[in-house]
Length: 274
Ligand SMILES: C[S@@+](CC[C@H](N)C(=O)[O-])C[C@H]1O[C@@H](n2cnc3c(N)ncnc32)[C@H](O)[C@@H]1O
Image (cartoon, rainbow, N blue to C red; front, side, top):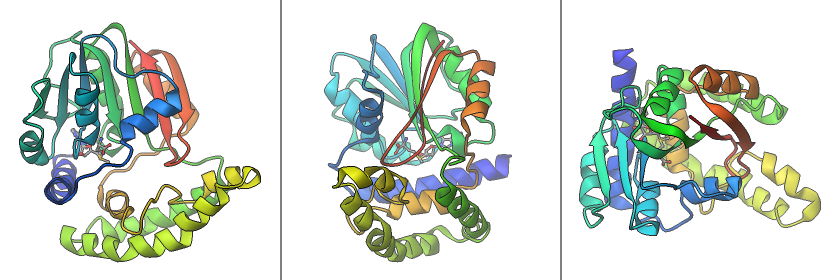
């Protein structure tokens, strides 16, 4: 388990160090996409936690939108150090390098917890749910994004099987070589999938088809690099069906569990209360 954790740390430290030093993202954040999907506010109370902040766009957005509130964010990649520098103008963010499976906080501290695309990359997602439950105040809410297994979309379901086979090779490739392959593949997949999906999305009759097209969320030819690297390098990738996810969250002590499918990137948006 330690070895897989170290590989995950190395992969994301590589990806985010590059991203933080070279990119200035000004597109919609994951936070906004999740909030639009829920059609509800995620931030509530005085103090919140983001688990697995990665390149930091979501925590930056929250801190800027809610300057009167306090935010903590953890991630176990070494990129938290570069991120601390980028976010130093915010005095309402506390960044900590820590594991999602052992949160460095006392019980019952947070008014909400948010996490996008993190726990499915850990060795024990249920332990992560239990940890989030522990640090939440009573009746406080968590909002998560997690991968789905596409049990209801045969095209994506079988594509995922293919991806799993390719991952046997790519998860063992050196970071730089895989990154270069993703730079090469991104424009090709953008032309093959993202552009047709955009066209289908323009017509009422074909919107549902557009939602099922892989990589429909690509906004420009090199937009898929990070997503591809994430898909093909992260050593662990757990995908949830509705029932398993519901059961895991209940076992971790959550109530009022609401599962919504996110449209443009696919996957589960989970809202649940302690
Ligand atoms: C797919 S990225 C998502 C990053 C960010 N939430 C976003 O939306 O862009 C997954 C992140 O989870 C972090 N991560 C994975 N396993 C973790 C663990 N056990 N503890 C803390 N962070 C973890 C990785 O370092 C990476 O930054």
